[in-house]
Image (cartoon, rainbow, N blue to C red; front, side, top):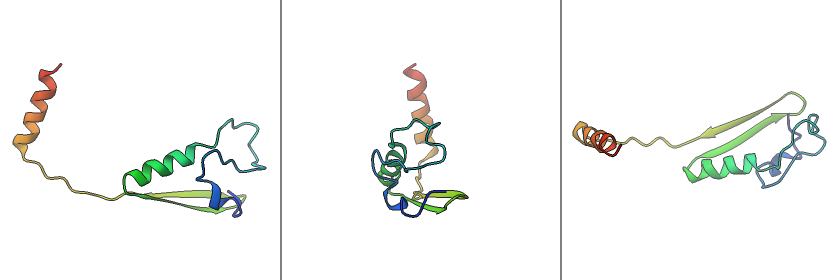
Length: 86
């Protein structure tokens, strides 16, 4: 897991947890979680983290669900456009 003192910072660009047990094997720049957070927030979602140091880390991503309604005729028209342009 991630130490609680590091949790407030893990979504910052270029942040890497110091003294990570596998830091020698992992060659990262610290951008991954920053990119994930921006993508999730761009879709109106949220990302949360829970961690037990030395045991586990859990990330929870929630995204809004939006229902989109289309007529079947609209869908078949879109399919025809796709095949015609090939």
